[in-house]
Length: 254
Image 1 (cartoon, rainbow, N blue to C red):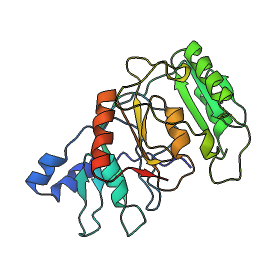
Image 2 (cartoon, rainbow, N blue to C red):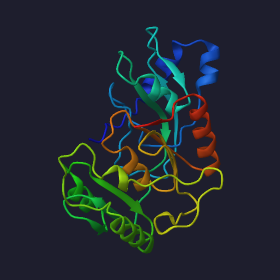
Image 3 (cartoon, rainbow, N blue to C red):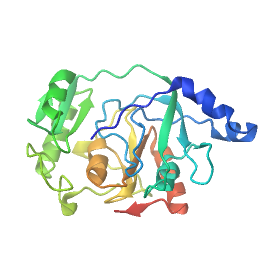
């Protein structure tokens, strides 16, 4: 189920006021994803209805401390989400202090929904995916790229109108793997990228790593409790974040 967007502008100063000057200076950070929402205590995966690809928020992740009453802040989503895995009374949420207008897409692709394919408007996309178990969709600026992505997903068995009763939408053997972190991405039908497209990092999922598209990332976390993923603007940033998470022991195969 998509999680509620958490945008408590007024709470940021209140939380920061409880911290020391050093903590405030270390905690201010820009987080490049508009879909990080208030997370439940037992499931740390952000919303999978990724309507806001490309939108940048000035944000700081606030992590409720498991050892003291006041919250502490961290710029690392993987660290924050990992710290509250398994309950223990902790929760994680992102605090958004400013946002840009959401991008308007020319076409949407419904990969999993009541009906699938390309639709020209958000209301049509919403209608096709509402109350559908493990719905998946993405917005595109080009109908040509959208059609190529849909055909590629169809060929790989990632498209469905069946709201499965299983715990995950596709078999593990069909879940796409990440790109080679050392060598970088190679052109593929599903990953024809615009300059401002995001990169996706799976920290906890079927195949942890870096992915060029939201769909490939989503298939690695959708239905897996405790899955953690993030999106960033550049491949270099994705490499750095994933490497840091590996060093911190925050990369886990589910």
